[in-house]
Length: 275
Image (cartoon, rainbow, N blue to C red; front, side, top):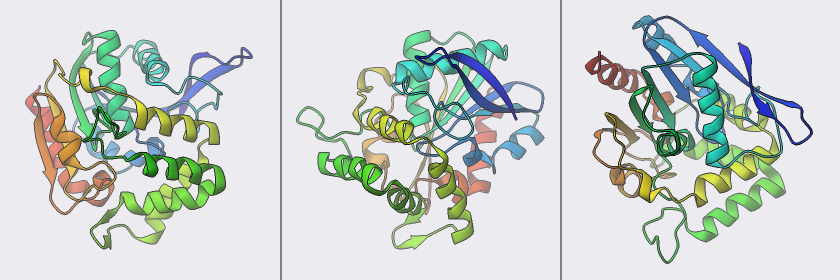
């Protein structure tokens, strides 16, 4: 575990991102979902390192062990942090792997900075292209009342809200596919985030319109759980431009945790195709 300075807060306090950097070979950078941390990739890091890749996983600002500034939670600010990670660690020929909100960060990064230095893209349960349902986005999966309920839950009792959300991440139909101790691990990740980051990050994830940005000019793999009811495939992953698609049968939103062997095989096969 190490820290990398990516900027300063409004009071000139350094903003530092906590990251882990393992292995050697072509780099893979892992971007976590809201409201989690780099620890969501616990089942993927060893498999990637053992397959001969350099793996970098970091905590988004305000989450995990990173600094907790007040600002910078829009996608433009977050991709500035990603740019700093790639530059400071001198990473090139990178595969970017993002889950949920992290997938949307990747799309905005490519829009803002282009494809230089990026080789491939993997989008997992992607919060794309636009979650918020409105008159001009009738296919958005998050109705205004759902978004308002999540926002209110963060204010009234964020721990109860995060508990319910973490359970839903791993539910397929009526079955919850992770043990209670394993879900406790994910609940703790959400609880560790700053309240400001949770609130601002939720708004960014729901209200950012990336419909004009999802024609990705790189080899792209979309991985999605069949039973993802947080970000349903039919109105999110299926709407991403020209890409390879793997829908994991029987899996919920958090498919990297509930179906790690299938997930890892799919990811490693895609990476190997680009060697």
